[in-house]
Length: 122
Image (cartoon, rainbow, N blue to C red):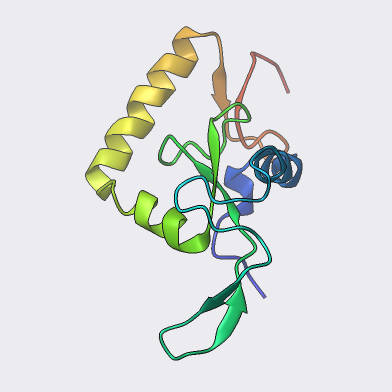
């Protein structure tokens, strides 16, 4: 089974970063207040439980290990991401790349690096 997101575009310790974000928020959506473990109802009337996400505040900044994160339920995560049209995502991604490079970070597509890191050699 493949994931919806490309794992290579996230830091190697993404699971740890994601868990820390959710833990610091008390496993509560910082937008709507949903708490992990509360039942939700689908439009069809089915009950389900939202595991919560660590959502990137800067669109498409997934490779940055220092990107600001917000704990959001799946619905709020989707609503937040939909605020940014794809053209704006590309613009924000480029502006973020410029800021990262000015801060001394470099982009590395190497399979073991997968994104922004301090200058290094292979």
